Length: 218
Image 1: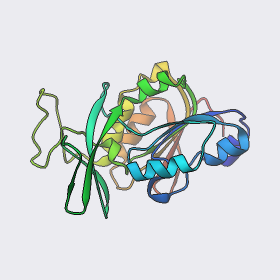
Image 2: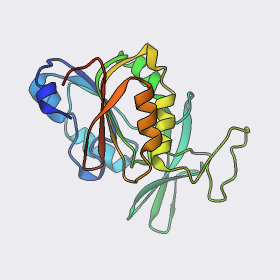
Image 3: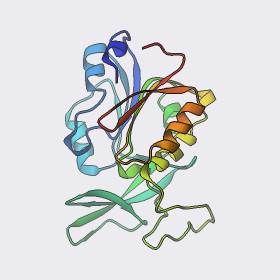
Image 4: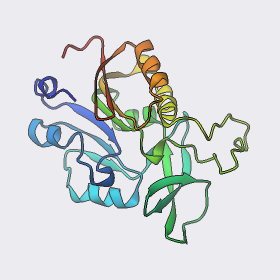
């Protein structure tokens, strides 16, 4: 995020998905503490969510959940192990070897924006490396969902994020800056989507693709 731009805004708003993931600093903590910003912090990983809560972000709401790649809520099973986390088909919480399975609810991004009165947003931060971008109905055999919807287990993670953003009616929201953290070389669908909705790619910093709406001057 461009600090010179953010310093011009007091009492701004944000939504950050993946806050404090793997002990990484939050994108929005400085904005909240120094400039009085407020917003919503989302974290699907149970341990990372505990870390989030320990930071006492008093101006912001928190959600132990994830973003749905569809326009309706979903429930996923989280598989947490020594090498990180991923999603598996729904099961009851259980231990399997060194892994812990637990269920997490996912909500459409637009629904969360409305519920928290954040349809006008200064900064949106999405971590595409997180398991929140997977479909809970994808299984190891690559079978389609039981209700007939299309499913693509091998879809690049950035394409999953493209699906998350597609659930948002872009004409009904006002988002100035969108920061997407990608960890592969399949960013083209994301860039194409953002360009088609009047965003420009401002800069790429350490796998973070920062898009700015064309009406915003930085």
